[in-house]
Image (cartoon, rainbow, N blue to C red; front, side, top):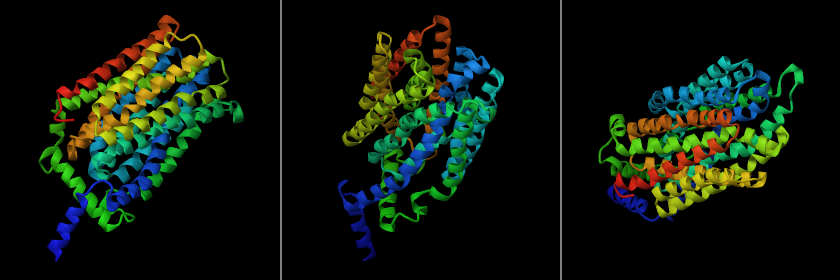
Length: 441
């Protein structure tokens, strides 16, 4: 009888995606995990890019040049790069709950300490430490999602999770603009209030992670046993398809040509993402002449476009099972947004071009990480995701630095925007060329 029951269960899990057990499990996990992880990532992204809004006051008050601001904004990613792989391997070893909590509490303290910046040296030091503290958060979250969701559901859930980076701009723009209006209260500058108050949520949420986030599906109290069994067998089957072996090692991932191509693609994506994110408030201020608060409001529009397009592309990629062309098309769309912005003569069309660029950048993220998850597993996934993210995030240093360098050299943003457009166009071409170094899709 027991053998018959096991056979029946295996038959059930091989049925189509419309099977009620599968639908219930996916719905339950999505509703339980994604909203919470979404909030965590909003706070993470806001704490790394709010320096762009702080610059509206801080640069003048501390007499920071465009080059100094660009270098200091980007040096975050040098610290991030140095500790990224060790951090993700530690997470895989000790568990997500403890390590993500540690990451959030430490980065929240440093994010608030940014209010004590007095000049270039302290600006560089605290931005570097912020990146070092946050290292491992994002690839750890991606790795964590692979513990829970079968591959055919991965792109949409990565997209839903990463929509936080777009909606952080929707929420953070007006909030940051409003905090700058607190300038002078208790003798504290508005940019100092911004850093202080936007760092505190990370500390509080870090403690919440420890009590809320289960390590693995089998340790969750809210997932019924039948759904746990279905999920365990489904993930085990996918794991075997990826490697044909029980475990994929770190050095297998490092030797993979596809991993290194993905590193380069992600580098181009991140160059453009943070080139636009760090400098958008200053660009919009220059284009529109609006108050700091209104600049925050206008900055919502590109991020809204990014959020909508990201979800649409993620769902389309999951439904078709196609990753590469969704990724490549989104990156090329972003390049057109950057390049067209150089030829616009009005504030309205400049914002439209920024929206096109943002939509393409964020739209590529879901298919990108789903593609990476299609052939990385075990320790190889922990190390591979971290390697891709750490090398790719060096683009987070390059993009802001390029914008600052060209702004000081030419007096305009046009050369910087052109360079970002060409870089991400190269990423789109590399994504299309992935068909020559992959098995199947």
